[in-house]
Amino acid sequence: MSNILINALGIQDSGGLTILKKTIQELLFDSENNYQILVFKGKYIDDLIDKSNNYSNISFRIIKNKGNNRRLIYENFILPFYVKKNRFKLIYNMTGSDQPLINIPSIVKIQNLMFFSKTLDSAYFKNNLRFLWFTQVYMKRVVLILLMSLTKNIEIQSIHVKSELSNFISLGNKNFFIKNDFPMNINVFLKPKNYNFTKEIIFLYVVGPHFWKVHKNFKDFLDTMIVLLDSNVNFLIKITLTREDLEESDLWDKRLNIVTIFLGYISIKDEMQSLYDDNVVLISTSIIETLGLHVTDAVGHGILTIVPNEPYAVEVYGSYTFTYDLFNHHSLIETINKMKGYNNTDCEKMILNNQNYLFNNESDKYIKSHHIFKDVLKKLESNV
Image (cartoon, rainbow, N blue to C red; front, side):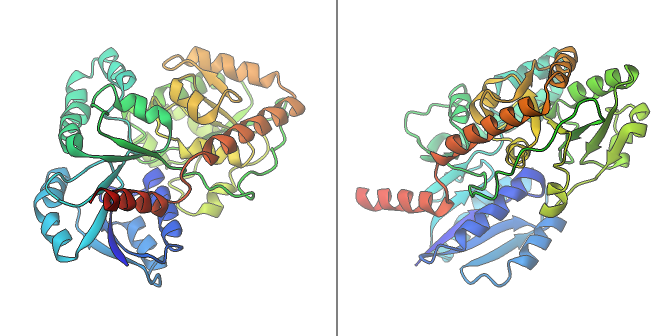
């Protein structure tokens, strides 16, 4: 039995929490290793730990979140002693960081391309947000590049992530493992919903508490909805934010309140699945994604999606989805109008083709995290 440390510091909610839950479920079936998961204390993490107390091969180490600087110090100067004391054989870093001073194999999982995207850089510059870019992106990019300089093993969710990383770091000495983070079972792919665009269209916008960040590109969605409202289009918005979240920001137009259902953050799977209904269309405006679980989940549940016409979207979701040009709400409106010309048969065919692409694309990847762990440790042993 080997002891493996799962470094999940930085995961609090949204997509990261979903991936952590899925990882835990995968590790339950590994009888060859014991796992300790390192997490920050937090509401949703606490709920997860309460539900995971009876797992024989999984334990948690909880520390207080005292900010990024303290985290950097902890991971690189305190954690090495803890790793040595507990004789861990491998560290699985789930949030993109690494620890060059720890002398055991590590795997870095890339779940966020915010720090490795030229398209996102351009968005900051185009909007005259150079200082914000320097503090939010560049400073963290420099740190991550330094930490990853000695990283040998990188886990990614899609091949386009490797391409984006290659713009900033040398990949010559890196081993890449492409991991499936989309639940691959027959029950995931549900029958396509029914569509009749002569009736009310429901636009679903799934986003976490960081909706205001540049890479979420919320403005494309907002500007489009305002135009539709002024054009008397029959539609309803369902958004995973509270009314207070939006009204306290400068990214919302209160005129949209009359056509909006404010759902707040949804952490319960059944509640999320209940949103996938007839005439529901998910819109994603993200500038960059490693996977985009909100989109893959929507496709799996049989609804139409509209995504940016970007390389990452083509690679992950395929060509059987509606697309629009980033930073151009007129393009998004044109796409919606084009979609409204589809009948139910057209929509069903598009969704089924999208599901088929997603299934085939994800099937070629590692299915479980501990399969990657096994391969990394096996390769290490063969080199000894």
